[in-house]
Length: 519
Image (cartoon, rainbow, N blue to C red):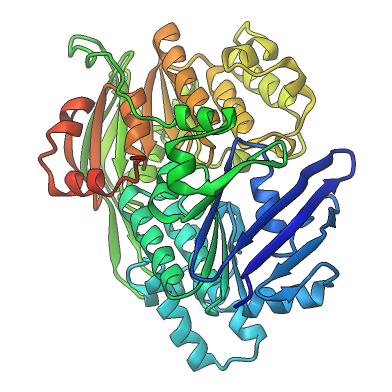
C-alpha cells in the first residue's frame, strides 16, 4: 500500500521573504496520525497548505520545489490547479486554521459543507444526506438547524466544527487538519480528536498541525518538530515528548500551562468595577422559536481581580463578554460599571465612560482596519483617550519592538496581533479588560508569553481582568477565581484551585476530565 503522503526535500519560498520551508522530509501511512508542531513562524501552516496545493493562497505567489511530493498516492510535483482542485475535492480533506474567517458569511453552512459534493455533480437529496451526516460526525448538535444557519449565527467553536464537516464530507483518504481544535472547549475538542481518531482507525491518514501538545499526546502516532522551516526532531510521540532531544522541543514542553497562579482571591472589600445582575438573552432560530444564550447570569468583578469564565462552545461566554462592554444589550437584567448604570444607558451617555472597560476580541485581526499600520491604530486609540502615553510606550507595555509601528496587522504573527490588541485596549487606561479567548490560536511558547504579560500587567497596573476561555489550564494560570458556564447559566464559581480540585457541578467535572493534558 502506497503512503498517503510522501514528501522529500520540500522547499517553499516567498518573494521578499525567502525560504520558509527548507528540505522537509516526511512520510505518512494510511491509518496513522502524524503531528507537526513548532513555534509560531516555524512553517507549520505553510507545510499544511503546501501538501494540499495552497501554499500561495491569499498572498504572494509561493515557489514550491520538492524531490518527491506524492499526495494520496498521486505524484503532484508538477500538478496544475485543476488537478489540485480535483484531488482536494475527492481524496484530500483540508481543515483551515481560521474558522472565524474561512466560512462565507453569505452562504448557509449546509451550502458551504456540501460545496465539494456539488462540484462533483452529486444530486441535492444525496448531498443533503451526506452534509447532515458530516455535521453530526463533526459534533454539531441539531445538524438540520445548523445547516440552515449562516456562519455569523454560530459560535467560534461551531464554525470550527463546520469546517471539519466540510473536510470529511467526501470521505478523503488523507485529512490535513491545521489547528482543528483551536477555540474549542475541552469536551468538544475531545469529541473532535475522537472523531479524527476514528477516521484514522478506519484507514484515513491524518496530518495534524497543532500547537496543542496535549492533543498530540492523545491522538498522534508520530510527531515532527519544525523550527525555522526545518525538521529538527522526529519520531514516535512517546519518545519525542517523553525524552525530547532538541532545545526547541524542550522549550515547547516547558511552555505548556500546568501550574496554578499563587495568589489568593481578591477580598470582598475591594470596590466593584463590574456587576452583572440577572442577564438574559435569547436569539431567534432559523426554523422558528428561540434559544437561550444567557439565562439569569449574575457576576461581580472587583478591582485588581482576575476572573476566568469557562464553558463549552455556545454556552454564552462571548455573549456575556459583549454585554459586559455594552456592545450588546440584554433582554432582561443589567450591568453596572463602577457602581453606576451601564447596560441600559443610551450610547451617548456611555461614551465618556467607555474607557473604563475594554474588550480584547477573540479575532484581533478582524478588529483592525487592514489599511492602517500599528502606529496609526495606537495613535487613534491614544487621541480618543487623551492619554499622555506614546505608541512606543504602549508597545513596551506588551513587549513589542518599536519596529512593529510601521507594519500592518496582516504582516504580524498571531501573537503580535494579540499583543497589539491588548496595547490598543490599554491606551485608555481601563479599569477592566475583558479578554475573549486571548490565546486560543497561539502556539504554546507565544501563549506562555501572553499569559505572563497579562499577570504582569494586572499586578503592575491594578487593571481587573475577565478572561473568557475554553482552556481551563489558561484560566488556572492567570486567574484567582473562576465561573463555569453551561447552557447560558453559571453552574459553579469560586477560587480557581478549589474548583479545580473539588468540582461540585457534573459539567465542571466533565470539562476537567475531557481536558487533553500531557502525561
